[in-house]
Image (cartoon, rainbow, N blue to C red; front, top):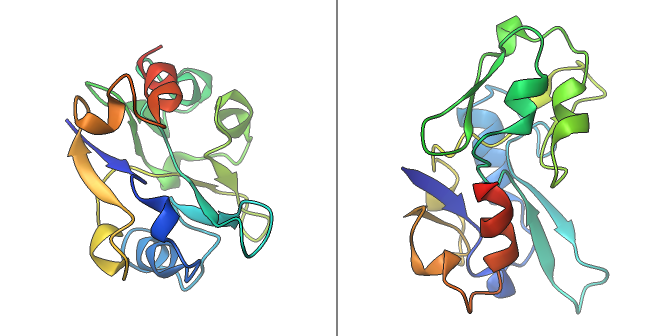
Length: 153
């Protein structure tokens, strides 16, 4: 199973191209917040940016918390999202261990990464990749090892 990885965030300039691509292509909106990937400053212009995205938990606590099966566990990690089944309760966002689910203040719906990789091609600095779950991204010496370990729980 392939997963979206923010593997080179030191290159990120905070342009939000990935968020805009996700919102437009996946959620059919023009927004950089109502997207499966959201970019935040890590504290200041000189400290860089962080990508807030799903770490593909297996089992996914958000799927277990969803009372309507709007979020369904994918085999191997991550979830599928059926927004038309969402009742806007926010239980998924409360259950997410990495704060990767946005409950939009505009429409009350859940927005989260479904690991489709549509955002990858829009990053001008190749900060993102769609990689196999067992890629070097999750190697023991990777700076993302904690996120990978969390995703496997």
